[in-house]
Length: 149
Image 1 (tube, helix red, strand yellow):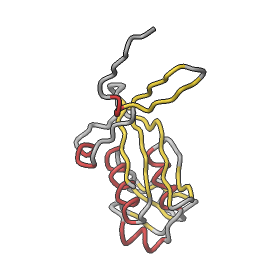
Image 2 (cartoon, one colour):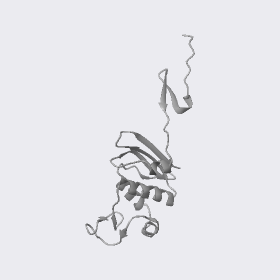
Image 3 (cartoon, helix red, strand yellow):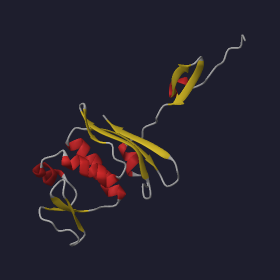
Image 4 (tube, one colour):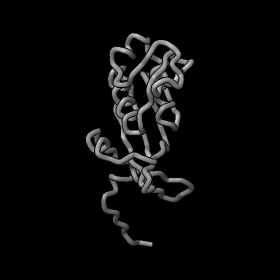
């Protein structure tokens, strides 16, 4: 076999040789925060999530609210209250005016929809100087990738 094989845009793939075979895997294309804010994430699901601070894992959960609570658990109460966009009460207001009590952070908060929760996740990642790598499967089955380093 003396044929030359040319592959355009090879830089968009991760190349591996396994058992003598060349395996090409597309590299993730990350969207910007602006693009993410314009994306409809209603009825979406988190496929992959990794939030870290240096070498410490903050969250790998797959539900928006669980990810956010993991971030809040890593923060002092005062810092949460100073930087959040959510409504909090320091008392157990479970079921009152839409508040839900969370034992792990010892506060009640009013939930938001997936987009509001995702915006708060990104806000808290920036406030705490965390890194995030997120893959979200949209209702259309398209998977988008977002990260902050």
